[in-house]
Image (cartoon, one colour):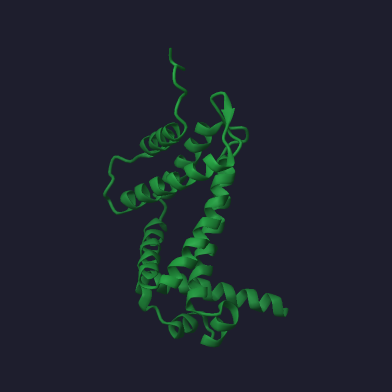
Length: 206
């Protein structure tokens, strides 16, 4: 095994261990236990991530990166704005029924708790999420809508609103707080949000 391969193996082991223990213990998760679960020492954590906060931020990027890649594949080529939003919402809703959905929600809530307790971590977490949100905005930019196309700035604004809607509904479904939020309901809510963000021009229905 090359040095680069060994480094990546260790990185992967620490991220997997951190995902399990951060979800279980929140801000109380200990670096020595994370390292032990990964079969490594705390020195490996500092070498690869710099700090516990660095490991947590890398964990966020590790989870969000593949997630946004899946979103890109979920949107049909050539779909207009509402078609793209519909496809994204349906993709999200199907994921909430997956066996790992509850663990994902636990990790989401735990990371928020950690960010609220540690301002520096909160700032770094916000940067990581904004970077990933840019991928969602890119999926929406240039989409056809009515007689025009979606600008980069409007796509950014809509991406923020969509994330809030889908994260909230997703947590509600997993926690049993949104029993009526089936695929059609979620897709309709997302389309309505997009329509409200890009209202029909005055007089268009006259």
